[in-house]
View 1 (spheres, rainbow, N blue to C red):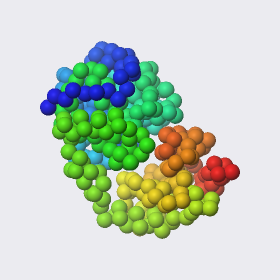
View 2 (cartoon, helix red, strand yellow):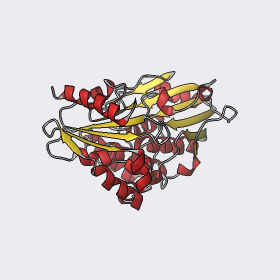
View 3 (cartoon, rainbow, N blue to C red):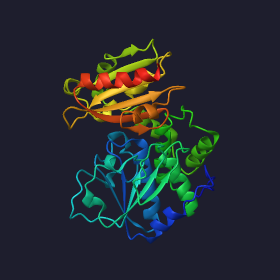
View 4 (cartoon, rainbow, N blue to C red):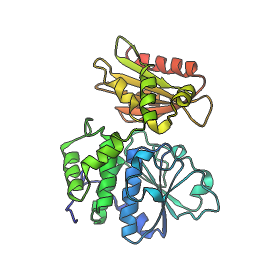
Length: 333
């Protein structure tokens, strides 16, 4: 179905991106490690659109595609794992929804001989590409792909629309965050008109949790603590919790939101162990009204948005927890 698209931000200059895509013979699309709905949705939407235009396109992620997004068209075409230097690469690599080159998880050989194009909506993006289009006004990188396709004159297919809708749905917390503007709702309507089906997408993303995931939720919420006179809430996950529940990192998605939902809480903190590396922890932050958790994460070497951010830290759990507590305390000082 052909839908006349209205851009979210009509003044964005997409021409350098379009020129690079037009000139490329082989394109590789990639998103960050432990990808979320925005990274995957952006990747699959752009794959569908570019292959429909006759482009040679590959997709490759260090961590592949999370289970809850495998319902999307082309998810089975995403490569996973360590890139091999003798693999057939591209002359254009498009990094989607990734704030730094290191978060792509790829060795130097992956980029050899290629132009690196960086499309992202995180204000903390390190501008690591040869060509960068970073705009924090967008609610999701998927919304940037929506505007890119409009600029390219490419009509939405059902597959493209569904992937973008998934990207936007997840990065706006089901259209509940402050970045859900009237323009975002108009875009969502265009995506639905093009074939995206909100209910089946929501069921796959939010109502397909395995039993192990519920056990992990229970175990995680048992760690809940509230500090700073009720203004911060803390949860965590350890290796022992993975072992006892049978869950994996994909089952931790969204757990931090329970901590943020407490009425007095302004900052939610979620500390989880890295499944593959000892003494390595992923720290996630969520803000509610006035706290800029992007700046909070940046003070610890990470980054993200004003309302959602994170960082990687090394050490024992107690060491990491203590360092994070000091940083959060400064927010409320």
